[in-house]
Amino acid sequence: MQKIYKIFKKVYKKRNPLSKKYDFGLLLIIGGSKFYSGSPAFSAMSAFRAGIDMVHILAPKRASDICASFSPNIASLPLEGDFLNQNHLPLLFSMTQNAQKVAPGKVAVVIGGGVGREKETQRAILDYLSQISLPVVIDADAIYAVCQKKEILAQKNFLITPHAFEFFALTGKKVYNLSLKEKIAIVKKEAEKLKTTILLKGDKDIISDGERVEINKTGNAFLTVGGTGDTLAGIAGTLLARGLCPFEAGLLSAYINGLAGEIASKKLGESLTATDLIEAIPLALKKIKKL
Image 1 (tube, rainbow, N blue to C red):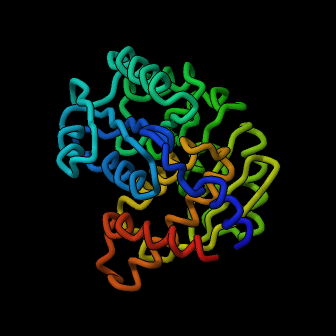
Image 2 (image 1 turned 90 degrees about the vertical axis):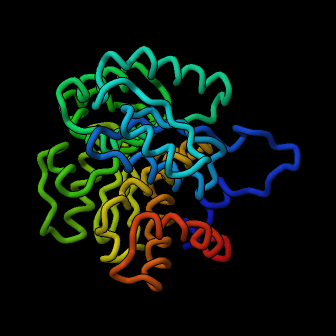
């Protein structure tokens, strides 16, 4: 608990009355497709609840329009077509550069939620990740993209957030029925091998940068509902934008996401949805502040 509180205090300090927009981060969210349209919105809404100043969503048109309809807080730029492809790269790089100009040192990226696994999409993700140096949360379908070129992960400020099957796709290691001790050893070894930070999601989340390992025990079985991985990614992206390293961002985001899920599920149980978890994030932050 003290470790969580210590990391928490790094991010959630008393605000200077003279603070201005972007002092507390700008998050770029790249994701969504014709079918999986809500994923970027979940990440954006959770990022706002976690304390980001601004979110820019870059998504194919249908997904972008749906995301914009979720909330007037969300700024969403539509990309032509049904899926992310290499034709979108100039715009992605332009938006990334503009973000760095308006919020220098305060920008992070979340990529992969709902983006799909079309070959053109995977190539675009690889090209984008290969050419940027920002902190990035690599989630969902983007994990399958980096499986094709793992060397792009080495020694960048990347946080990869796989569940067990995505972890298998990335590493070739099955962790489904292993003991916690065995899982910890594997995650640490693979993070060291890939020279990156991994947050393996599960009943107990395991976070490792290849040297350090931490376990998160918040959360419960109600978080199996769709969208809770997207909320985790949004929280993690906020923490990266606000200055935490991938390891600390992974640990604290897992704790916040799981705690918010616990709070929401006490009231809603089987009826819990990702939007309910999002609304419980402020309560989770207040609870951590009192640790």
